Image 1 (cartoon, rainbow, N blue to C red):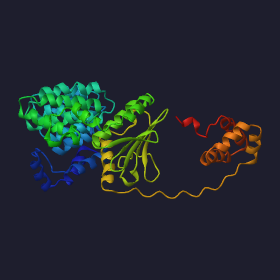
Image 2 (cartoon, rainbow, N blue to C red):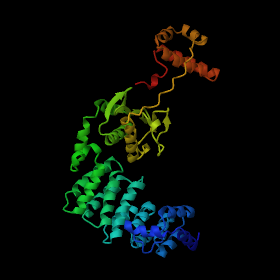
Image 3 (cartoon, rainbow, N blue to C red):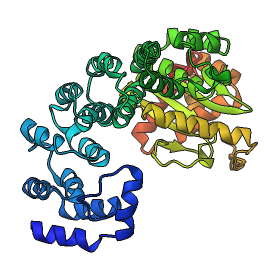
Image 4 (cartoon, rainbow, N blue to C red):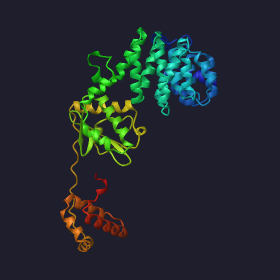
Length: 438
C-alpha cells in the first residue's frame, strides 16, 4: 500500500466528533484527523510490517499516521537514531505510549534507551524512558531480573518530578516491574517505601499508589500503607500448615521453587485461605475445597476444584474431568501462567465458593463387571504359592487393577509378559501401581 492510499484510508475513517473529544483526554489534536485507535489498528493489520512506509508516515506529522507507523514498523529494522528522532517528535502522551508499547520495547536496545531518556528535560522524552521500562517489564519475557533491578534506582531518583505525564509514567514503571515476579515485587516495594520518605508530593503519590497495588488486600485494612512486606509475610504465617513445609522439603529439587511460588500467590490472592493436606498433597480451602498441588518425579500439577464452572480466557486448563481442571506437567516456573493471570483465576475460583455455587455432581460410574481369575493366572499361581497367598489378601480394587491390566493386553506376547511380571510383583506383596506410592 502506498503512502497516498494509506492516508486516504485514514481520512475516510476520520470523525469530527472524535477529533473534538481527543482534547478532553489531554491529547494534542492540532495535527490529528480524528480516527479511532481500533480503526488505525485494523488498517495496520491490513498493511502488515512495512518499514519504509512507516518512515514515510512519520514524516507527514499527522497524529494518526504517527501511531500507524509504530504499528507497522519492524523493530528489527529500527535503529537507535530513528528512535531518537521519533522520541523528540512526541507532543502527546498517547503517541509516546503507542510508540513504546507497539515498537520501541521490542528493539534490542530498549533498556539502554530507557535509561538514557529518563535523564531528559523534555516531558515526553522523559516519559518515554519510563514507559519503555513499563512496557519492557510486560513484554520482554526473556529479560533477566538484573535489567529491571537497575531501573529501580532511576525511578527512585526521578520520583520528585511532578509533571503529570512524567510522574504517571514513573508510577507505571514501578508497578509493572513489581508485578513481573516475586523477587522484583519485593524490590519494588522496598523502592516505593524509600520514595515515600521523600519530601515531594509527586514522590509520595507515586509511592502510595504503587504500594496500594502491591500490598495484598488483607494487609491494607485501615489504610496502613506503611506496612512492610515482611510484616505481611508474618501476618499470613498463621495460615501456613507445617505439613506443607515438610512436603516442600521432601519434594524434588525442580518442584520446590514452583510450589513455594504458587503457595505465595494463593495467599496473596486470598489472604484467608486455609492450608491443609489431603491424599498426601497440599490443598487450599476457603468455604470449601479450592486448589490442590501434587509434585511427581519429573513434573507437577496445580488443580482447581471448580474449573468447570469458570471462564478460561487464557486457556490455562489443560485437563478436566468436568469439574476439576489442572495446569499439568509443570517442570519449571516458566511453565506457569503470568502471576497476575494466576491471581485472577484464584480469586474467581474463590468467588464461586463465596457464592455457594456447587460443582456439578459427578456422573455415577458405570457398574463394573465382575472379573474372574483367568485360567492362565490360576496355573501360574499354582507354581508360586507366595503370589497366591498375597493375591488372596489384596483388596478387591487391588485385585481388579491387576486383572484389568492382564485382560487389556492386545497380543498373546504382551499378555504373557504381563503375566510373568504380575506373578513376580504379587509374590513380593506389591500392588499394580506400587512404583508410584511413596
